[in-house]
Amino acid sequence: MNDIENELRKLRPTRPSNGLPIRIGMALADAGKLRDDVITPHRFRVNWVGLGLGVAAAAAFLIVARLDVHPPAATRHPVASNSTAPPRDRASEVSSYQAIGLTQVVYSKRNEGLLFPPGSATPVRRLRTTRHETMRWEDPHTGARLQVSYPAEEVTLIPVSGQ
Amino acid sequence: MVMENVATHEDWKVCFSELAPGLLLFARQWVCSAADAEDVVQEAFVRFWRRGLDLRNRALLYSAVRSAALDLIRRDGRRARRELEAGGEIEQATQPQFEQMDDAQRELAAALDRLPREQREVLVMKIWNELTFAEIGQTIGVSQNTAASRYRYGLGALKKMLEEARTTPARTIATL
Image 1: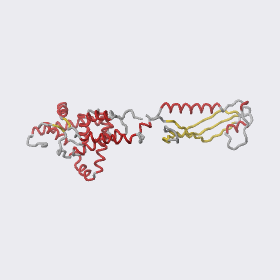
Image 2: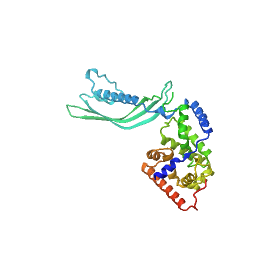
Image 3: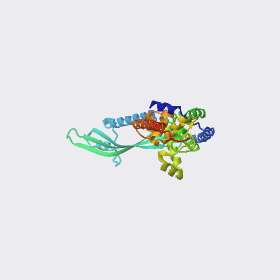
Image 4: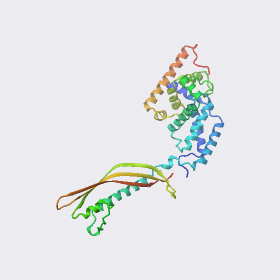
């Protein structure tokens, strides 16, 4: 086999004609003119730093939201009887009920692609997260429990830097 | 903004001068004439550069050449029929693919042309373009082991053809 390989390697492929590099050069020059107008896939590389910051911000938001379940009594704001009030505030109106838990189940996280907001120099990636939240309260005196479930949706815009 | 892996004009000239003979030989696996092979290489190379792909990614570059060759064949219906009917046995003797061959080398080149295309393209990528079997597999969409097998079968078939030709001088393989 080695003999055949060596014999094959001695064969020299024909060189391209002199016109080929010239034609390619002209085509590349044309491509260069268009290059600034074309957004190539490489400009859409994921910016992991930005993505990490976005995830960290989202996590911080969730932690704050979770902590807010137990607001001090002094800081509780009176809630108007509004049908759009969050369930946690409405539940807190019920005497002696205390929040005991919040469960968030993310069942859909969709990358909706790049957007170009007006006036923005860089594109942003839109992530839509859909989840199901369940909040639970308990009356420590009677042991009665209250549970409310509802869907929630969050849209995150993550700046994507070009290369 | 300049992409990091986009070659400048001087860069592409250097890269192209190194790669061109192997790319042209690779393109000749699908098209008969040197002119068509140059068209294929030009289209693939420009397409590759426009997309800002890394020229060091040889598997992708050869895939681009393969794709451009198949596009050219599809565009030309008559050529497609002719090539498909001929399959791997197409006679490519109209224009030599190698430079300055003696009789033994002409015999070897003719035997190479008689190989099934799937073996010949692996030999071309391995011998004259020095791709690894992993890169070859990536280019033609087969496993590394399959690429290596085709290479071995191709070499074996070449050896057998040359031995037969030398033991039976009356049967010449080709007269390039």
